[in-house]
Length: 353
Ligand code: NAD
Image (cartoon, rainbow, N blue to C red; front, top):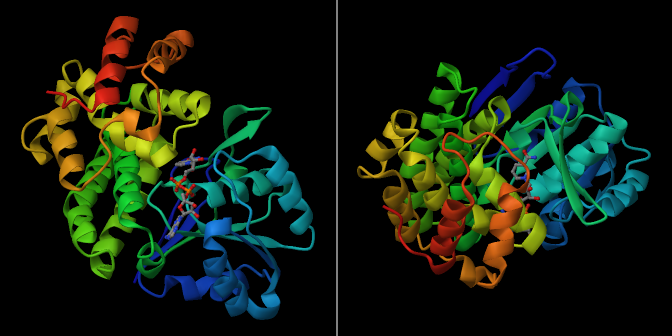
């Protein structure tokens, strides 16, 4: 079991992290250490059994289970969950980014402490960032209030993640690290975090795919998830995250799959201009940034084409327009024609160079 405290920036609350088999049984201990005694357990409808197990283990220290967490954190669901949290003095979120997002949304409004048990690799637990949706519009905000105080990474919890989500969620985490390497505000610490995260997934993900119950490899990839989530909180993201946000928000594409498909294409888009920053990625992935990431994804059975997610070819023009509508920083200037070509290649699943 690895256990440590981290706190990177002024105003960023210290975070307690534990990684190892059995970490999920430490909720009570962490609550006691903080003088907390009334937890509301959060999860999704699909993970209600995992939520029940946590509630049972907490016994009288659980005031309830709210199992309606939803992707993109709609405010109507947050409002219902706030009622369920009325008697709670802390939140215990067991799930992926959707469940963790709900915990963050409640914490933003109540400042309740959060103990989080991640079950995917998305990395939200390691960031003070919340995306929430009101009236169909998703807004992202940053606040120390939403950063979970305790993260318990238990490989046995992520071992139930199906193969497809395992791969796409892992690639989602890797995308944070790839964009961190060429971030405008990258620094030596963020570079090291990003590279360590990429190495953890390069080594661990093929082993997990070969045996979903390989707890050592699951632990290695969860550590990678913490590294990639942490670096996401440290530096600004660019083209890749912008495109995923556009496709997820405006075309309702699934989060992890969209990241997985776009990553080789957005990395290839920036590879020439950010060659030095991305040199370690080329080195890790057989000499080519975009092609290497594409081959890695393909070798793991990841989806490769946006058309397989239900996007229609006639949506690509609008997607390109939306992606360039609000200016944002990217190492290579954002040109509409080049973005349209990128989207076409991602649509058909063509391997980038
Ligand atoms: P998710 O939480 O939506 O989970 C996807 C599905 O898999 C759900 O049905 C869930 O119940 C199920 N699932 C999760 N873990 C499982 C397990 N171990 N076994 C079986 N089923 C499991 O997916 P996600 O990709 O983790 O999260 C996506 C959301 O997180 C998006 O809304 C995204 O914007 C947000 N996110 C936020 C940040 C941030 O820093 N704010 C970072 C990354 C992602």
